[in-house]
Amino acid sequence: MISEEEIKHIAKLSRLEFSESQLEKFQKEFSAILEYVENLKKADTKNVEPMAHSIKVANVFRTDCAIEKGEDTSRRSQKLLEAAPDSKDGYLKSKAVF
Amino acid sequence: MELEKLSIRQIHQDLIDKKFSAEELAKFFLDKIRKEDGEINSFITITEDLALKQAKKADEIIAKKNDLPLLGGVPCAIKDNILVEGIKCTSASKILENYIAPYDATVIKKIKEQGAVILGKTNMDEFAMGSSTENSAFFCTKNPCDTSRVPGGSSGGSAAAVSAGFCKFALGSDTGGSIRQPASFCGVAGLKPSYGTVSRYGVMAYASSLDQIGSFGKSVEDCRDAFKAIKGKDPLDSTSLKEPADSEKIDLRNLKIGIPKEYFVAGMDKEVEKTVKEAIGKYEKMGAEIIEVSLPHTEYALPCYYIIATAEASANLARFDGIKYGSSEVGNSEVKDLLEVYIKSREKYFGSEVKRRIMLGTYVLSSGYYDAYYKQAQKVRSLVRGDFEKALSRADILLTPVSPTLPFKIGEKMDDPLEMYLSDIYTISINLAGVGALSLPAGWVESPDDKAKKLPIGMQLIAKPFEEEKIFQAAMAFEK
Image (cartoon, rainbow over all chains, first blue to last red; front, side):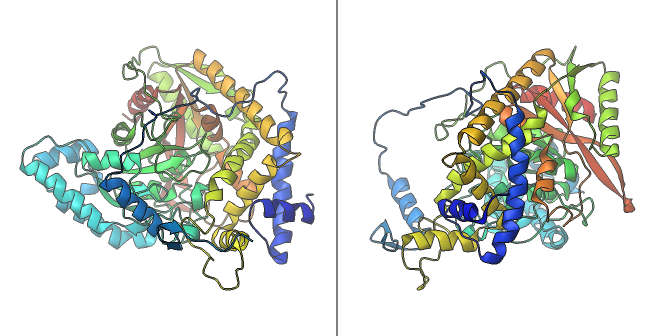
């Protein structure tokens, strides 16, 4: 079974947190899932290349030129800013980092 | 006239013949949704204004006697993780409860250009994580075939809307079975195209190397017509591909159907097994050659998927930070600094399955576990893909069940996440391999607790990348 401390560590990395009461239930479910995915270790993967993607395309580039800032792009930036919880002078606004 | 029974092609012809207008058609379906969706709950948002605007445009084309595209005026529904400009797009999550899409996804741009009428956005498992639509943060969708049962998931709202006759086609997304399993549970056709066939631009990413947008239709033909409208390479999605020029040329003579022996093992519902085997028998009678094939790494596909999909999800969902968009605790006076904004916003607005998957993904990518889990899973993925390459070099098409069980009861699997994951055992490998697969009804059986109700059983037809047309032709031959 995965320890409570380890769960708290992973939660921190995930930018999540669990209350003490949620923690116990989560620990049980998480351990069962981990035990199940452990099965993967039984597969013989000697000399097998890992694959990250099902299609073989790499480094798809567009032409290296600026996209013209037309009415459409400025309208879109406005819309993207409107979707933010808080913004100021055309920038996203956040709390202090420290 | 029973408008909900007409095919897309029939509607197209009737619109041109002015048997009804696109506006009348849109109003008929909007009205039907208002009256009947209270029982099914397939829609999160109804987009009446947009629908009527699109319908009027289609009517203008008809009035001017211009060429009406096939989907012009045809009512449809869109899964709520696909962006439609100016319309709320929630992914069935509290974290996006009030998020308005700032632009159209490429698939939406394409169907809008054809003049399709978008009636609304459909319910789903939060961020497409689930197999029953019960993980929606808002409400659970019911299966129109038997409302005590789930519609499947994660695209349960889209499948239910098509099944209930609320629209002519619907779009969904499929990462491990999220189109095919609900199609199977609701008795409709649903396609997961081969990877790269359809642009993912504007669909909320869950696991980018597995996600594909696909279509639902009441018939295979409707599903096919919708798919043809959305496919194609898109400069805005660098993983979308140009299809080979000869992909439409299909010869169904001497069709060889492969049956993977690993898919017919203990644990499958007896009725599912019987119905799918009968379907195989029908193909044999139609003249197809049936051969046994092997996908030897099948037992590893599910654990492999849950490592790869969650790893990608943990990275993709990092964007929900309470700063860029969505619900946020940034205004909460008790929240002191940036890190707390992240943690408190995510803690409060993500549902439990989403948290579980982010946690698992973070765990398998974390220092000390990467090689044992993530890298091992990537190697197993190569083996799974190799299995399909071999099997599909011997057979034109593979035929399998879609789900090991009948549509299950609402609440039945909610307390055991692992049990829920097993619902996807026959659909997962297809996404890992990147091939295409269609789910279509193989037959109908009596509901175990209500003999008056019939429950559908789906089967899955799988082919090589870009061979969707072969799948459709074989499926339409069966449907006849």
